[in-house]
Amino acid sequence: MYPFRDGDTFAAFRNIIDSVVNEIKSLENGYVLKASEAELEEFYTEKALIDPLVLHSDKQYIKNQSGTQIDVSHDFRRAVFPGERAVVRGTRIDIAIPFEGNPMLWKIRASTWSSGGYPEIDVKNGEIILSISFPDDSANSDQLKSDITRSIKSLEDAVGYLKNDVTNHNNSVPNAVKQALKRKRELAQATTGAVAALGIPVKRADSSPTFAIPTKRRTSPPNQKNST
Image (cartoon, rainbow, N blue to C red; front, side, top):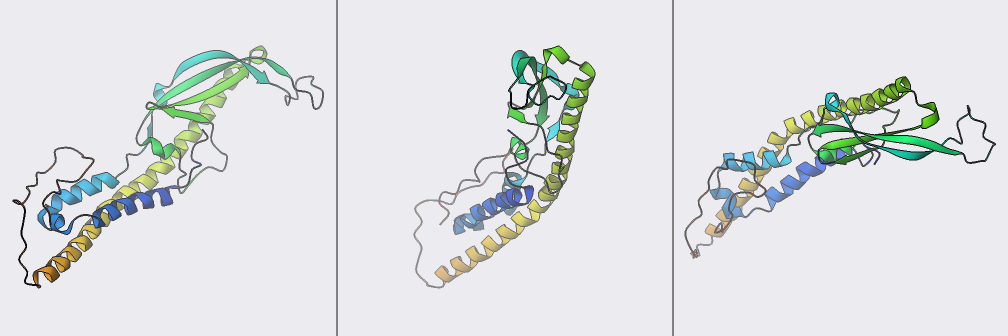
């Protein structure tokens, strides 16, 4: 894949916050009024936070080396007739570089980016794979080092730009969640008050739920049963 081409951080990060806000809006009124405010804020804040990319260039290694065919038709240093396709034997090396953070970030463009483009990479299992191919009859270690260094530097710059956007997003999340929960509680209180004003008894099936503060990030909020 060519990285940083599927949209931008502004839209992607906005969608994350909108998704969390919509989830808060969909909570049962009774549940919101009974649950711990601090616990809900912590849960939904963590859900909207993004782990920034960290590229460990100092831990790069050659993951694979294989033979390949190199098209040299456009190499002006070779005697190739115009319109003729010339192929020579070459070598491909796959350089793996470990990374941390949300792999989704490799797909989106930061608010600041390089107009020079970025090298094609594969992203899997906590690594990016950068592939370099060269003709066997003109292998040049200095040139290879220069090409690899330039490609990695462009990725490091992009990761740095992304980190700035991630930091700004993460800083905005707590207030967005707090405001969404505040609005939800206000609506829940108004709705509950309107129902109570009817003067009609409410029959509950069983006792009220209890809420425990989580010890780690969860994929769902506290138990919502019996929250009418």
